[in-house]
Image 1 (tube, one colour):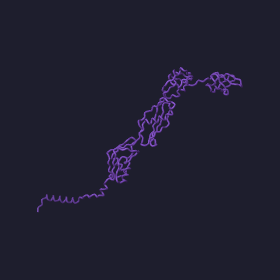
Image 2 (cartoon, helix red, strand yellow):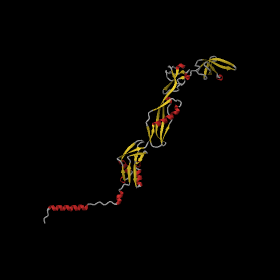
Image 3 (cartoon, helix red, strand yellow):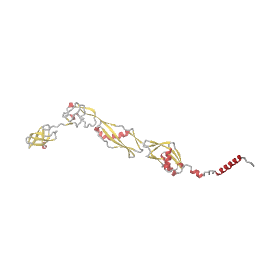
Image 4 (cartoon, helix red, strand yellow):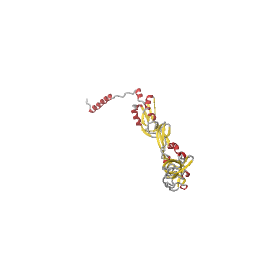
Length: 340
């Protein structure tokens, strides 16, 4: 019998397909136990925004974690997500960050159903302390220094509007002020504490303005001038920085001797004048003393200057001796035993 070549080719193909079908391994059906093992043990739902407290934070602080396996859920809750931002600041994380942290904690990500936005924000909880509160504490600390100068005003250097602190109980504590009122600047350290621990130390700088009613000169005064009523007057002025011991009474100023040049309309300091001595060096004086019931007077020459009641040395030409005597008045001196 004659076979056409085409029949031979078709037959060969049929035989080949039959052999291939025989070699294909059909997949085995998945058992119920295997299906159970592929189900997630926990569902982690990440919040879009979270606020954390400490310097580091965990998955539990940014996500809701649910599951029937309590041990696995506890492991997930404890997964560290790293360092928290500074108080008052925030940082952006993404879904991939959580997966990396799960792997780093040796947890099977396939056992977790992660419900998370592509990015989420983590903020750090904070306390806010206003600059007004800091300034009030600093000014309160200066009260003992300015108690004797009621017309003093304090002008602070620029401060931030708020100070950011970690969460907790906030307390303010001030240190001892540095500087002097008359020098024009006081610096007060203010300690900002959270739960008893120092979070920040603020150096509050206060500029001192002293406006007082003081004695001023009515003309330019030269060293050696003796102040009279026409040389001084009272005026309310702002004292320059560094000015000390302002005189506040014209009666106090009258009769004083000027020690250094004082310009017209300038305030007069107590250290710029002095009480002129009743007796100057080389002045002739009368020494009075008693011999029994007899009073004796001799002439002497002052070796020192002094005011009433002070002890000075004098020289007696008649005896060529020096004695220490007390000044009684402009012309009279007495021995210590006869000073009264």
